[in-house]
Amino acid sequence: MTSQSSGRNGRRSRGGSRRRGDHNRPRHQSAPSRAPAKQSFWQKITAFFTGGKPGPASRPVSQQPTRNNGFEPSRSPRKPESVEVTTPRLYVGNLSFDATESDLFELFNGVGAVQNAEVVTYKHNQRSKGFAFVQMLTVDEAKRAVQELHDKEFLGRKLVVSGAKSSEHHSAN
Image (cartoon, rainbow, N blue to C red; front, top):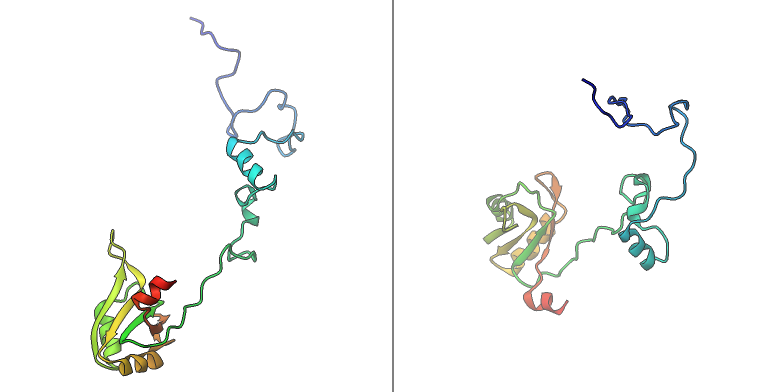
């Protein structure tokens, strides 16, 4: 019984299929230069809006802006804004993700009387967002807490402690 085939050998080399006519060329030589690849629809749209300049997605990975290879990142990290303490409510930033409300309560209780401590978390998985709010009993205790605990090492990170923005201040920005 004979099987009909399309003229191709059923086996392929490990490197994948090879084009016809390439069997005499050694593997280490590169193929002759070809015309530029045809652009996709989205590449044409991007080229239209960028004036024909290649966008960041078309750059080689080694030239992508990252923090490690010397290129400037696309956005620089923001410095924490120092807010004057006018209320007993304090903002605690750069908080370890492992910190709990009881940890904060104990830390700030060493400075003054704490009314409550609240670690801000994501709703869907209850993981910490890395910041919290602490309510002290008086404004004087809050000011003392900022002086003593700002830039203090806590659970492996330097805390950022400042006055919390009030709701009027927040809506103005």
